Length: 421
Image (tube, rainbow, N blue to C red; front, side, top):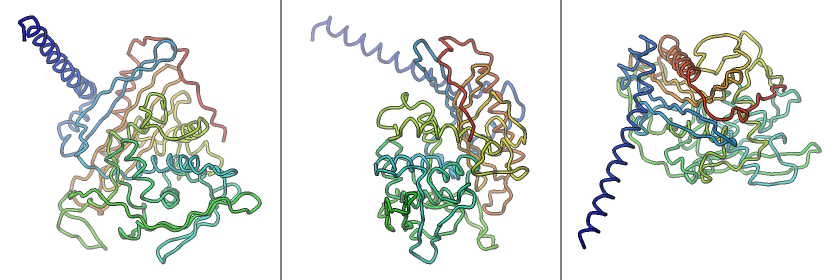
């Protein structure tokens, strides 16, 4: 090798090393931005960040910049995000299941079969339950659309279970893994205490048109899905059948859904064109509009199903930005999200938009509120720790966005959704 070639290679290696150093520094600054914003604004959040590992805090924040001709640029900031740091995802798993139910209908491509087709759930086992009508629907018919509404409006557990049964374990997990969501494990129903084997079995499901003609018959299935092995034990004790068991609680066979994956799926529904083709769901434009509408609608705006106050309020499942507040939101602020809470874990993945002030950002977070490290004792600090954290986090990021000088052409800012139900 001559001297000139040697110096060229040396220069390229040096330039590459500088590029790597710059990239690492940029990533470090991005992490520091979140911490800087939170510490500068709130003594309460100072205490949360000081206990970030104990409280298993993770935060993902994406800035959104709209340029000329509608081009969108995303800048991601991360705080303590680690896929290996397990949290129980609770109701957040309902979001990918709801999306996949619409995708499955598109894949079946059966004339007359859509999200508003009557869906009858049968049973094939002592622990399974059937559904022939839905009193919460204005016409009494159970449908994919109605189940998704209930999931997104109030995080209904039974609605999720019915879509889980329609899709089955193998379809849910294999599809998400192929799309690149490789850490996902959605392997059980919610709120019903079934064994691993019972959760592998799914009910028979049939779809009928308005004349009673059978359009699609999905038989009962048993999943052969191999589970990724995990050894996830947490805490120092848990209650089972009213008895305290003084040993760590085993989450190894519980659902798994990382914050990165939740954040990415929320983004894919709001900005499908900005997601790699492999990670886009097979949805129509009408499907996207349907999901966006009910992710951001309040329970009080819904006419079918009806969710009356005081049992339900307008900010019922809007943890980020509103926390525990029971208020009527500003009409120009909408939160497109899917939260979850269980076993002391509080999670939310959200796209926050202020149509009046041209503010928008993506924000996802998780915190663990279980000071005594005992599970199933109903002593979780949601109201004193988790919900105040979510509210202050959302408000601080929102206020930061309000102060930014925005570039680009705001004519491309999204239009307000028509919430007439």
